[in-house]
Image 1 (tube, rainbow over the protein chains, first blue to last red):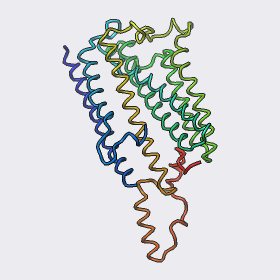
Image 2 (spheres, chains in turn orange, blue; image 1 turned 90 degrees about the vertical axis):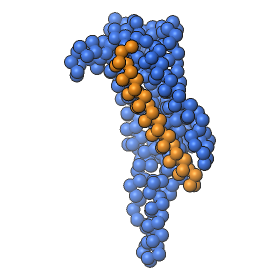
Image 3 (cartoon, rainbow over the protein chains, first blue to last red; image 1 turned 180 degrees about the vertical axis):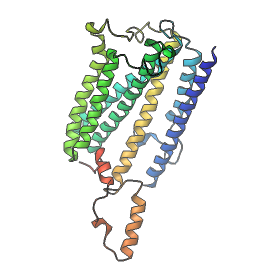
Image 4 (cartoon, one colour; image 1 turned 180 degrees about the horizontal axis):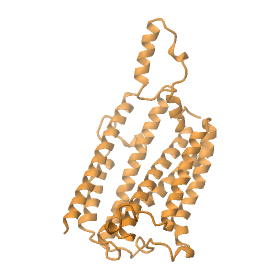
Length: 37
Length: 284
């Protein structure tokens, strides 16, 4: 299989995992604000 | 799906954690299992179909959700239904924009020779579906322009609700009916038989379905975050954002103890106009 496929796969996974981490962090911050009420 | 689906004092809800392996598996399947698409001009890059098509489909779903909450507002007159409609339209517009961008990349790769054409060429062919998606973007940008142009929250909510319903009615026509009209069959570049039954082999079909499910989950999570944030803003003292409220409270306390006038007599802070864009100025 071509090397380019693995490079693009790696980039796609990095993008997705970064997005997931960002949304999880945001979710936690919103939750802490909700619990403060 | 609102704050009921998060665990107080705990971590992320289980369905959100499930999105991590779901999207990861879909990405790996797209590159390692699905293989090159035999019937496409550029078989290797046809994998973008696993992102482009689900985003386009889900954008329509979110525009329907906006119409649903708009109808609920028109019936129940609850201000938060209007907020939900606006937030659903935002998610739909984001997905439409992403579908347009991935579609433009798809266009260059499939219809313009990919890297053989100049770097600036091939992204736009005025294909009927490409034109249709631009019209959808303009329709929903006008929705937000309408919301920002009306001061009174009730009038804004009513006008936006009617507009959202009409907008949602136009989307299936623009996405499906228009590009399949007989007059466009000679000029359309989009294949018409890929997403239908029998159009994909097993690896492609499974990856496509998983991708649609994963993108749906991520968009629901994004929408839920927006709704929770809007609910927090609504509960903050009028005219203050939930970020500034504690600091403002402290300033007011110090001002009173110093014998100064009540800061509540000061002009309305700029935060009130930002809250107005999402119709969060209290109930009614």
